[in-house]
Image (tube, rainbow, N blue to C red; front, side, top):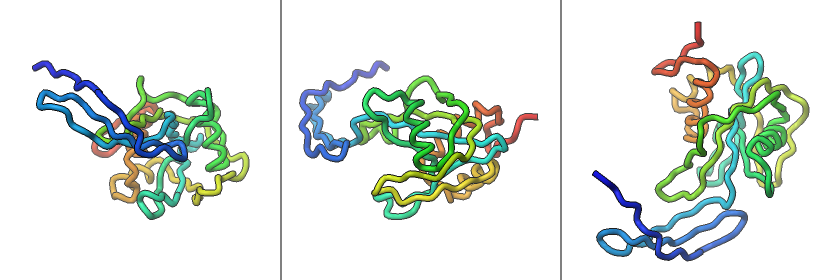
Length: 192
C-alpha cells in the first residue's frame, strides 16, 4: 500500500507568544479539506540524560504548568539563536542542576517528536557523560525546581513503577541505556 502525504493548503497563526505558537492548519485529504489545531515551540530543544562517573542520573523535580504538579524529569531547554544542541545542553544542565559534563553524545540520528499528533516541536536527545557538580542552579523566574540524583538502577525502577511519567525522559533513557552498554529488555541489566 502506498500512502500519500496530505497537502498543507493553509496555515493560520492563532497565537504567537513566549516562543510558542498555536496554528490552525488546513490539509487536503482524499475526502476533502480538513482543519487541525497544532501547537509547539519555535525552536528545537535539547533533552539531556546526565550521568555521573559513579552512575547517578542527574534529574530535576520541577513544577510543570501543563501537569499542574511537580514532575521528575531529565533536564533540558531551548537554544539561543544559532546555538548547537550540545551548547544548549551544556548551558541548561549547568543552569538547572549546577552540574557540568565532560562530553555530550547525540542519541539517535534524528530529533524525536514530543507528540506528533498535535505538537510541531521535535527535540534532540543527548547523553551527558562524566557529570560533576560545579555550582548551584541558576533558575529563570518561572522555574520552580530542585536537582535530584538517582542511582541508574533506581531511575529505571522509578520508570517501571510509574513514579517517573514524563514520556520524553523515558524515551531518552531508553536511548541512553543502549549507548551506555546496558542490555535493554523488560529489566535492563549492566553488561557483564
